[in-house]
Image: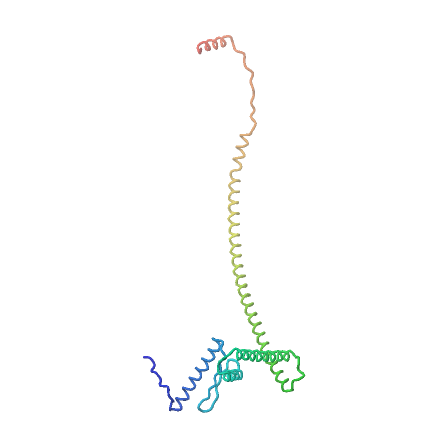
Length: 239
């Protein structure tokens, strides 16, 4: 079920009226703040409770908002002719120049310049402001250093972990290298053993093959007369 429509009239019960005022006041100031931020508007809100308590909000300063309100109220809430528009722009320029001048003077005072016209109270307030600014600057510096140290620690831990992983990989490679060396030495020993077992037989064969043979040429023996005749008959038969 949806909420029922609330009748807009004065709440008789004081407790309910105070609770509603607190809730609606917070919502009103929140909406005013959002309007000033989102729309770059100059907003001023003034609220007095039934007990006479003041609640206000201003996007810049309440004094500037009220001054601008009075000026526009005097001009009839709108610029009716170009002359009044020019006057309004001139006043805006004058106000901005005054604000710029005040900011420049404040900056020079913070830098230790143009302090001759200040009273003891003004100097004391300036000293407090400088001390507070110094505290803020030191806190910011400490925060930046802490962030950098934390980042360096994270990088150091990551590098340490990477170093451990690299050592593990190197150890695995060394183990594989040692295993390969053992296999190579074992295969070499087997090959050398086989070579030594066949070496005497090979040497004997080589020795027999390349050994010089003692061949003697014999002189042909003279044949007899019968042998020559028999050879002649054999030759005639072959023809």
